[in-house]
Length: 350
Ligand code: GRG
Image (cartoon, rainbow, N blue to C red; front, side):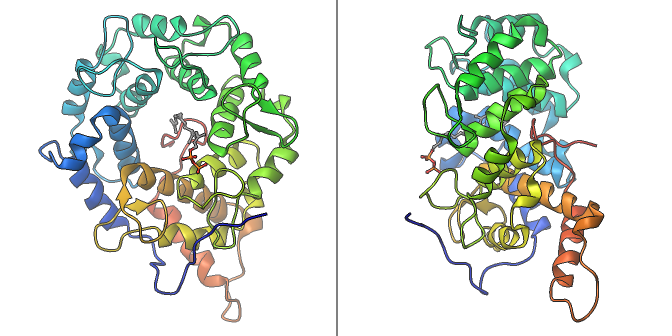
């Protein structure tokens, strides 16, 4: 089998650059920043705000400084008469941006502030549920298990799962299950992919149906995503990408097998993807940083560092002969800088 990978060397960063990341995220969130990059990503702005605010919240930074009132006002301008929410004003509503907006409102404790009409948003989500239990992402009809996750997670956050036939929705998720490797594809019969495993496990976890999968087989496939560099890919024969530190690690966490990964090697990879000058994380060492990789890299570090610093079986004896003792201190120090994250909703949890 072909292994495509990158090399991590001693010249790469090897510590968590907390204050640099906070600076980077505040600069990105600054509403006066109308850079070329900001304009080019307008089509996904709502998710961009979710990534930025979630990363700041995890880093325990002043996340109100990201502009709570402006953000909530912006969400108001993206609500459509049918209850759906778009990425930016004037764009079409979509389940993905509806979920991002709900996540932001929950983080800011703003669901009670009448920014959206919850009944209408619930009706919009339910209207995209098809007779086979699947969800279309929007009125144009593309079906994908990602949209099942967006719908189920949104309804769960609104406490309105009763608005859809949940068992039917999960029947569709299980139609995307691949018994050969224990994973999930985007639609029935499609190739297993780590991102789609996260979405499917999220649906099963929220609805209490994780017993429908072979967790050992799936855990094995997920652990196989780790490459010699320590980084993770999303499927065989692909390059590592920092975002899989979230999709793979959250999935392993949901099925209770996060310890199947070589976390020290992964830590080296994750830290190497930081930009020492600007702050932020990129997909691979040396590449440009962005809020997407910054939130998912940080979220992966959160899962690992909290497992490692809390689990007594994981701790390494602190003595001068033990080369891993430094690593043990490093995990503890990282866990003190990043709040715990919920592996299903990718939102901080107290
Ligand atoms: C709230 C965290 C959160 C998520 C919302 C949209 C969504 C739900 C999850 C996305 C999951 C995901 C990453 C799916 C991947 C889809 C896919 C088949 C990507 C393949 O893209 P390539 O070919 O990537 O560019 P690789 O790494 O396989 O080369």
